[in-house]
Image 1 (tube, protein in one colour):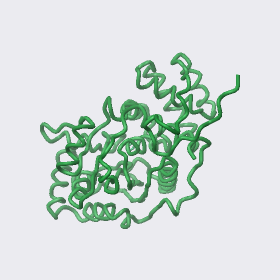
Image 2: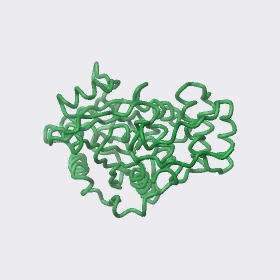
Image 3: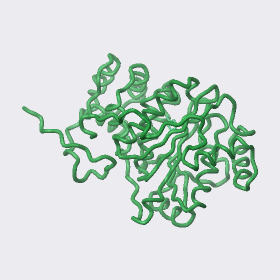
Image 4: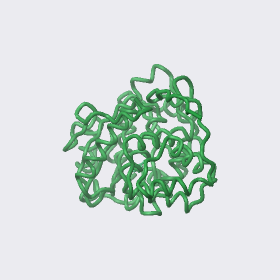
Length: 331
Ligand code: URA
């Protein structure tokens, strides 16, 4: 039987509506060992393979061992830009896409960091951008590897709730202009599972997995612009600057393929950012910074990233990056 002709996916459209090919039958979870073997042996995963794996992750039919094995296969064998974009899209589609009033669209922005010790920039930058009239619907993460997570830092505030429904997020954006929330059953649930699994399977420092994890959250947010702070050095996920540069290019390229305007700033992180490390201490330092004080390196990074990465020591912008990947069905 011949397969139907591929219908191009509309970049950034996760609604499952016009422009998307009809859902293909996905492989049952008993075929997961086959998918794992394919990637383990250096093969290329198809859209159906990737969607099948992500569906099994979300519906609970994938065993923890299978998830860990697939993550390790990806960590060791890598993914090309097409696979990375398809994984990003599948993770984003595992939950709901956030919808905002038309008038907000030009103002919807966000920043995400690849993670570093003492990195409390989001705690300062989200409210600072909101004070400038932006709308910041930030979906953030927990600690990964030796780097701290924004959600864990916020939870050091008694009663702080990082699980918010899309309706509550809209209310927060109306009232305060920003919110910082975590993955949930409704928001990128597949990233929630893979994120936690990566942390305990030594698969955090994988370029395609970091890219898909970050961009899936940002695609769901429905942004008009995103800046990613790609850190390198001893206090970051990637010690090596060249790897960080490659990650920055991948983030910009895959983002473009999915209709996301992404800029990336490479920032050195050989020592912790600011003076404090530890969840509640970092919240205190972030509050100081919001009051106009706080350590100069933190203030400089917040204002630099807020300006769109201009203060980053090295920048990779969409227009300066190599041509974005043009996977067959993501053009
Ligand atoms: N932030 C994320 O959301 N995911 C990663 O993999 C790294 C940093």
